[in-house]
Image 1 (cartoon, rainbow, N blue to C red):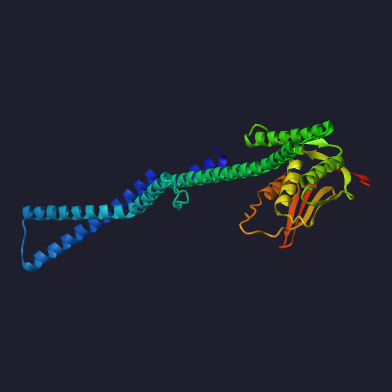
Image 2: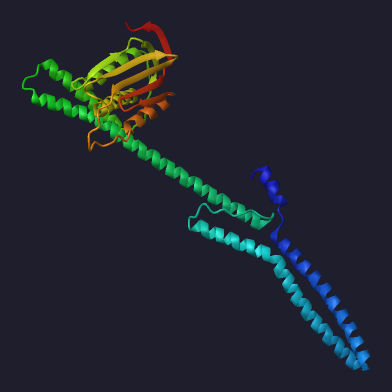
Length: 356
């Protein structure tokens, strides 16, 4: 127990001593009441008997004295009980309030808080109950936060799994629909299917909690961006006019999980495929500036058709979370006509070489 807590505990008054003090106070008041009533009664009796001309012998006087003393004692006992109950009433009321707090805690009414009064065991009990209530609230809030984070992770990964799955289905449908394929074409499509399948496996393992993120040192970040931009363009080129600009991208290095970067580009491609206007160009620009890699995508918005489901922005939220994990940020600017998203990722080191 900390020294401060021990010191505070020593300063607390014991409830038993407080009750004894209340008993003593009640007894003192009862004694004073007895003395006052006894002597007042004796004086009134003597005055009354004298005025009436009654003379009492010793035996009658003793009987009168005993009777007055008994009545005064009974009256002082009533005074003692009344005073004691009055003085102890606050403690009893506080105790009942604490009991109601325990009952509320038992019924999981965790917003209940007992007001702390006095400096005794009841005070300590109230503080302990408040502490338990606060701890339980914090535990519940933490559980709720973890639950929400888990649900967000599940929605995010489930959404991201659909992108490589859609690519695999597209590749296989294309291969099935084409009557003749050259060996190099088959090898190329199988390689792309294998890449997307591995990506799905990684995302599925993360969804099941079997695999943690593993960052590795990327020395040639420019080459990686070229590959990811090529995959992005390949996913959209059948339907859109794609424009890729890496002219301001220097070579850079940094610690990244390649699957995270691929998820960013997959979500950008998926968002464009769903909501971009096929009549307009989809532009992707990658550049390095101030120890950051900036990824920008801009496109015209497709005219929303009746019955089209509104975006829940799960993919963009996934991109934002990934950017924050790399000390970055994401900005979105959207109008009725255009959509632009900008993602900044931290780069460890930039070289002076710029792609020609």
